[in-house]
Image (cartoon, rainbow, N blue to C red; front, side, top):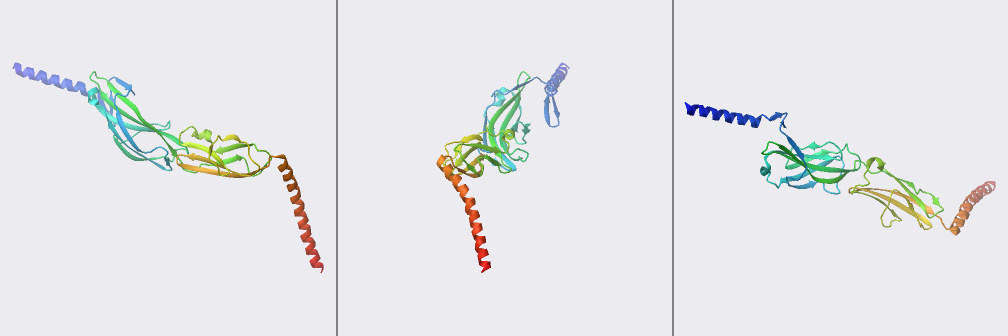
Length: 280
């Protein structure tokens, strides 16, 4: 009889222990909700090895971006406690995080048509939660990788406001460029962005959108402004004429004055010839 009571007590104790372990957790909509104390940390308690094959640096996408990576956990998570599951998410710029269905391997296409025609930042996060022996849940979330990619759903529009297709009587001309409203896109500070110009098919020079062309020689010039967004580029070209020295300016004024006179005399001569022929 005593042995039977002892067995009943042991069985009840075992059931109570199981209940204590199960009660703090509730499964709601496929997610594990806990009433135990939770510690959130980004300290590298777990080490990962991530290899990303897409996007790579200097990659431009139009409509869809390929996200492909492999992820391995280097640490022995069981030493820290009982692992509760690994989750992986990504964030583009300051948008909300998106959780991925795959955890240690991901290969999926992401719609990027909603993104601006600009350079964007992609961050990948991994979170491995585990239950410590003292009954505390640790949410160990880490940022594993941060990279940049560009979206070019349309060519970058470049408007060369100055110089224009005209004659300049100076060898110092303001360089004023308008590029797709950069104050809105904010992509000028990112590593995949470059802007500059080449004068008369010369070497490309890095240049601000508002600067000054100096020491220009007299004669025709061609300026081409370049904008590189990722591995895509756009250009705009303008031609202009410089007459900066006094002698050339005087010569230009004489030419400008003579050409209309020659044109008028030529018209009068042609009319006179036609009148003479008709009279004969």
